[in-house]
Image 1 (cartoon, rainbow, N blue to C red):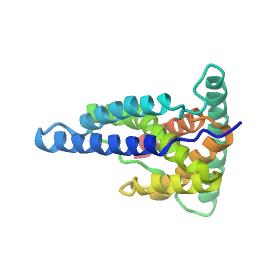
Image 2 (cartoon, rainbow, N blue to C red; image 1 turned 60 degrees about the vertical axis):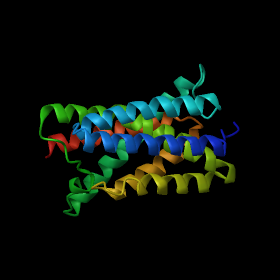
Image 3 (tube, helix red, strand yellow; image 1 turned 135 degrees about the vertical axis):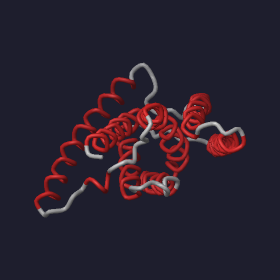
Length: 211
């Protein structure tokens, strides 16, 4: 299957829209004193709609068709199961050598109930959708014209770089490489999206069970 290539105009439009939405969200939170998590939910919803429209109008959504949905989601679940098994093995190995792996993956969850639900809605729902559309849709799709490896590594580096404030940057880089590799291997944006969603929910579950 030929890789889906995104034109430079679509990438530039995607970058411009995302920057504009992020700036508008920042001003809304600071000038109008709107709670940041509520602003974040709104930003990710708008970004999802805009990026989805931009990519769909130029054929940049790989695997989004009547035949591709089942393949992309099914392969995403298979990848997620394999990652879960490998992660459990890694955790067990860490415990055998008396290393606690939880600080490397723990996420700081909000203390207030409403904020926690908003956080889960963003991190376990609309956030990964918007991020996959941008990073594995627009960025990866544009870079893919120079080959699979540049697309995988550069898009992962951009993904990790824009998550530099995260408490687990190594996890972000590993996730970026994994999502991009799945996108290339399965030729479907749905596969990394499923992995992203299940991975985030696993991190949240661990952080909730072992605060």
